[in-house]
Image (cartoon, rainbow, N blue to C red; front, side, top):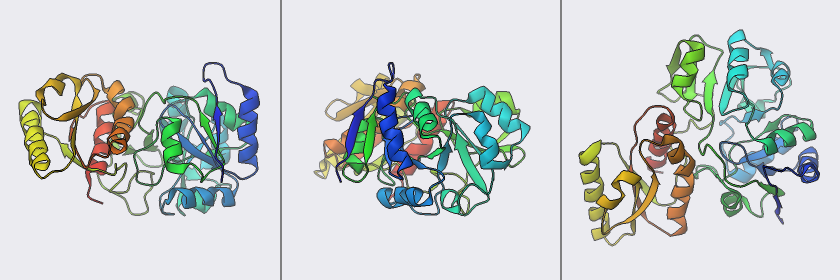
Length: 340
């Protein structure tokens, strides 16, 4: 298959190009497109055959549910048979934006999307290319990350092409994504509401609206949320996460890097900017300052992919503080560090 690359300036959107992508969606084909979080692999949410293609192309297990993307809040009432007042309040506060709401699904939502669960995950992306695509296609669009399953998520079109080139009909190149990690997934069918996946909206932000929120620590049978598998977001290299703090962290990173380098392996260190010069003699890639978590999140997946491009065998990664976006970053690093 010849994958067409459609370059669109997000600051000056060419609607004629969006129409071309929307036609592919209407035909039941797959289109990768940018959102504010990561690139998504899109299909018509009401076309079961098109949705099934996503699982096949990605190598994604069918027990891992998909997120439905919408462009209007009113669409919630078609996708869900019960939309709590709290859900509407959250949508009005954070949408468009990186928050996914888990609701009781309506009969319009197929089991293939929800992994046969009675709930559906829905969000409205904060990206004009994505929103225009949904509106012009005139259908909600399911869209997991546009990568091979288990790999670091794509934050630019080249990442998508690296994984899915020749396997899908079209990639919309809208430049680098802003947030860099996936959406927060919040189950609003339970009380208190439950965070199933950390992401672009922090728990601290959610608490200002919900008052109380439980953070899920364990995998749930049936995977009520995408991204809940134990091993995920993994580079081809072995990733080792060092969670100690301060000087102890630096010492442990150096110890591990020295150990594997002595074994003749190609070792790289993913470090905070303030620690970059503490690893002389090692190859270092900077994710950002430890205090600038938005920058670290935006750089996370592209940094992991760059290690793979240069064929590193071992990545020693410094952990970050677990507040705001740091919680989402650490959740992904821990999953990436789980042995395959």
